[in-house]
Image 1 (cartoon, rainbow, N blue to C red):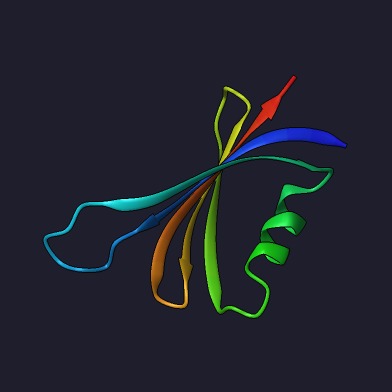
Image 2: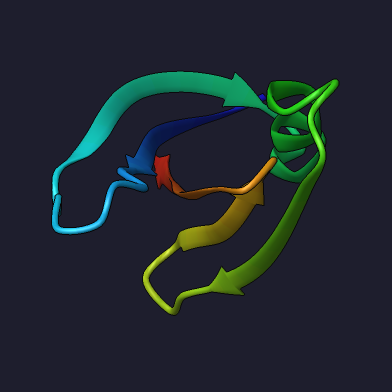
Length: 76
């Protein structure tokens, strides 16, 4: 299994409020797509995946109308 630092940002939907909740975790998985699907199990979500050149995978997510970003950085 690979280790990743996962950063989950949940953006505040209130107008004029630019704050966001940020959660940082270290996880182990062989499949980050499956891990993400499990994380949002039971929710209606749409995601756009971007693979960056620096071993970072970023998902822009709409989960039941709530904007979120989840980034996975592989830890060597």
